[in-house]
Amino acid sequence: MIRRYFPIFTLLGLFIFTACDKNDSYLKRIEDERDARSKYLSENGITEKNLLDEGIYYQELYTPENAGSDSTRVEEGDEVVLYYTGYFLNGLKFKTNVLSGKFEPLTVRILNKYTGQVIEQGVATRSVISGWAPALLKMSEGTKARIVVPSNRAYRMYGTIDRRETDIPIPGYTTLVYEMEVEEVRKSN
Image (tube, rainbow, N blue to C red; front, side):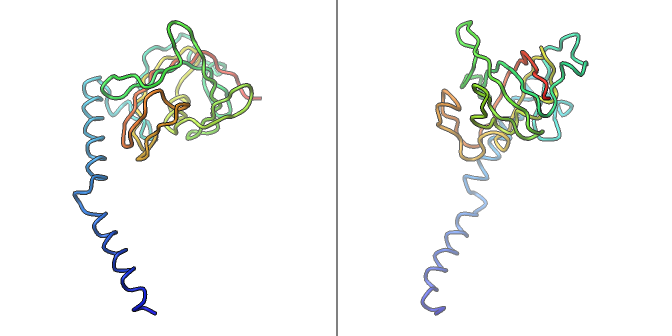
């Protein structure tokens, strides 16, 4: 029985061994992403003090006067109406809901610090990337912020070509930058 499957296991083992080579493009792509992200952070004055526990960099751009009050702060269970624009590290815009001066707000329900759902016509239609929830939980109504989301909190190694997700396909291992503004916080019951 072992002799019968020996060639199959040999080929499988050879495949695994060669796929885990230290010069593998997987490891190179992770290094390249980390280097590009470090350069972007340095050029934009984003430091370790902006790093959230979840690995997201959060830089507040505008804070309204009433940002500290419980009535305006985003909490788990809340629905957040927001505007956003997504960029690659080189500044190329890949998605926005601010079009030619017309605003198309997005509503996101924050389930917990890792998960948010897009709400359309009162129904959850899809999840947002896991990098959004921790950043939104730092925000209040009227707050504007820039977040830098590593690929492990965005589209990971797979990227996306789904037109509902992005206007331009996002390759795998890509750090993303979002500028977000919380327009309204609808408190959970």
